[in-house]
Length: 415
Image (cartoon, rainbow, N blue to C red):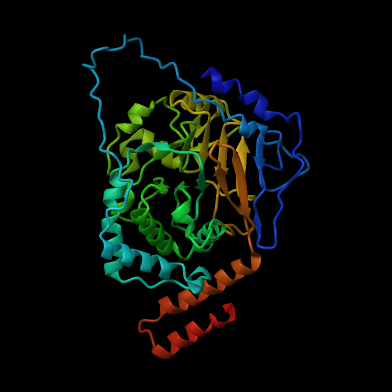
């Protein structure tokens, strides 16, 4: 535990050198150079800006060889012959698509339909029940093949926080990474931290798009467990370790010390997260840089608010230097907390204050860049108008053809 605890005090105070830059948002509403701005006295740095800017050295300090933890054997001598512990070796995860040529054509066409301009602008994609069932059924073998803790996720990856049904923001992330006529998911790797669905209007579009991409490019996308909407979600992994250095999950870690082997031994599907305490805390916990020890998470009514010392211990036990999480809406889109944690939210405009979104981009050496997506108040107003139109549609017991045409014509101003 000492290795990570020794870094906490230094992370809480100002760095020796201030960052020269801040959050630079260009005409597209995207910042591609942001590292950290707006540090508080609690050792928390977020993307809201402020007078005190923090240097990125705290984060770059993570880029060292992962720790070899000294694990407590609970007073027992190690069992050299392996008689007391049954070691479960999972099947290799599926890294190449097993779709037929016909299925590949079908799912690529479905992705093209989902990412049409008018759908990205907010118009819902109409899926047939067969399409939804087909995708949700065929993606399960890919998800099931991945262990509960995916250990072999490499550097050179983009980490995406909560989307909450904001399909427009997912499209923005992918659009920024397109290159030489190729889609982002063909050339880059992504790790999604959960909460794909929720507050936004286009949750199904996100799930359908991500699952289609998973089947076409299994080794380029990794998805973390969050609350369930269908059977396929029961096969999502609870956590991943990037570059053998960063622990990544939707919410956090269990304050009860656990090892990688223990998490690898959790079998899928997970019908109820409470069936396994390690999984439950990875989905529902919070982290508070002001606390030393952990306490009950009264705001969520379950799990813990993890303190700094407990997080440092948990990271040591899994041989990691830091944690990426989501699960919390942050006004600036991201926060650096006590040199141990980076918290992200990618969906914009989820609050009345019009929060920004962000993703973390790790290069091949593990060095990090934060890309910020500014909230567009005009787009948020447009989404609110769409909600009103949605309600009018839902209130009609019979969908009149003429009224549907009027509904469609409202999209002309987006062209």
